[in-house]
Length: 358
Image (cartoon, rainbow, N blue to C red; front, side):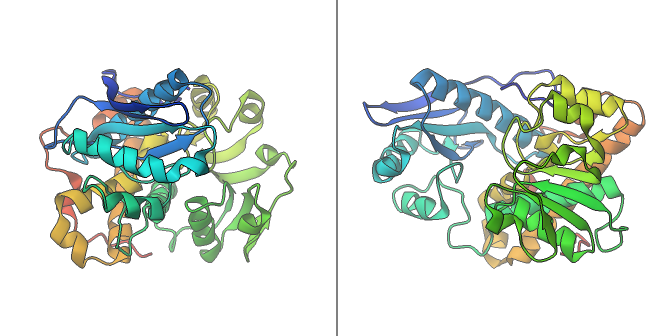
């Protein structure tokens, strides 16, 4: 799927850097051609893809998205992704770990991975025992999904032009109440918001204070102040977009629109739609701290890391919205807020006061 949010014009050059192909398991490391001084970074995803070609195509798409996210925040990483294909994903976990370790070792530090779909922190702990080329907050109080959630909250605060503790509560809908969306929804509830939740797992959406919606409820027809897609790519189709009544869309999910044009259609209606790489960068910012400021990382609390992530995303999203208010296109506004290539990795600035209350 094409990224619905316009990006700076230079397309990232990504390709398969290493691969393993067998009858029951294929693994492809996809990324920019780089080295250990600026390693590619992206999670390990395991799915039942219909073919190796489809697996590689998804890896190239995702690695390209990661390139834009890393460049936007100046993380010090290049874009990358590891995609694995298996008919029975759970049955190949042990082999996946050993194969991935061998591929990472063969690349000599030019690719670093972490969790993604169908891989867990436990998988990363096993992988890190075989290779050092893993960034997943292993052994740390920091949780990568929580970092993404707090980055999303920073983007919300940019839209509100105030910290949550000071903002007037409104009505929000969180679609997808997993590790990211659940944290976001709970934070909004704690700050007095009316929060509607949608999740296939009613146990996740029905926490105290939330208003879980029935599975077939047309949630896109609700009058809202905030819509937060935190579930799947391609969630919002043409019918939904045309019916949306919300002040802003703040997507933690990658590529939340089925058709690229839909985001621009909403913007023309006066709805503020933040580009997803601007919103969901919390995990890669945390990775930058872990990689480039290891001493600060070791001594930091989870609250310190989440506060830093939240403030960095809030500031970048605020700058983006300011550029848009001055009349710049989405593409040009993103270009304006993208980190300079000559600057040090964002992780090296960790430790500066954020002033953000969690």
